[in-house]
Image 1 (spheres, helix red, strand yellow):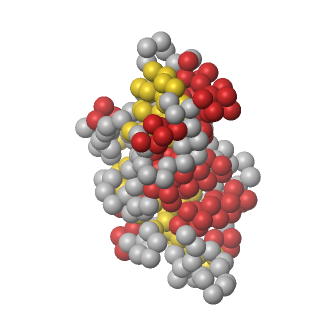
Image 2 (image 1 turned 90 degrees about the horizontal axis):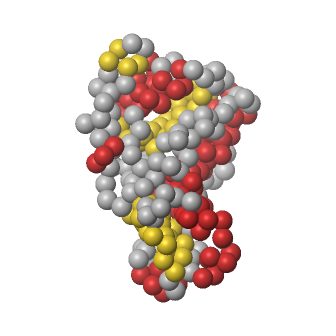
Length: 278
C-alpha cells in the first residue's frame, strides 16, 4: 500500500493502491490523448504507432516523442489497417496510438493538502459512474473549468483505458483521477479539509444557482438512473438540483457535471487549478 499523507498534522491511512502496481500498459489513441501523454513526465511510454498521414499532419506529436529520453520510446511507422488491429474496434485513432503505462495513483490527502493553500477550489466526486465515455467527458470539463481533481470509487467505476483517455481529450494527463476505497469516508476527509460537499439530486429543493456555493466546493454526482447512494447523500452538506424544466428533466451525468462546473466558475471567477505535477 502507498504511504498516507499527513493532513492537519494527523497521520491518515492510504486511500489508493501502491503507484508501482497500477496495472498493465494500454493503448492511448487520438491526437489530443497521445500528445498530452507525451507531454506528461509522469507517463512511461513504450511504443508510438503512427501513419504517414498523421506524421505529416501532426509533426509536433512526433517531435514530442523524439524529445523523450533516448531508448524510452520506440517510434513505428505503420499503415492504418495495422494500427487499427492494435486498438478496440471502432477506435477513432487519427493515425496515432501510444502504448504507455497507466498513471500512478494520486492520494486524496495530497489533493486536500494542495487545496488547503488555495482561496478557491473545486472537486468533482463520482458515485459509481461506470461509463468511460462519461468519466472522460467529466475529466475534460474539469480541466476546462479549473477543477483540482476528480474523485471516484475503486470498484464500480471506470478505470484508465484508451476509450476513457480519448473521451477526456488529453485531460486524463492534466487532472488527477483519484480512486478511493470508501467514498463516504473520502467525503468526510474532504469536509475536514474545509471543502463543502454539494450533491446534485433531481429532488433537491433549491437550484445550484440559488444555493450560493462556498469558495471551496466538491460537486458530488451519482450514476445515471441510480443517482446518489444513501450514504453519499447523507455525507453531503447540501443537495441542489439543476434548473431543468422540459419534458426530459435529467441530463447525462457528464453534461450535468459541465453545467454544475460552469455555475461554480460563474460564482467563483478566480477559480484556477494548480499546474499539472511534473
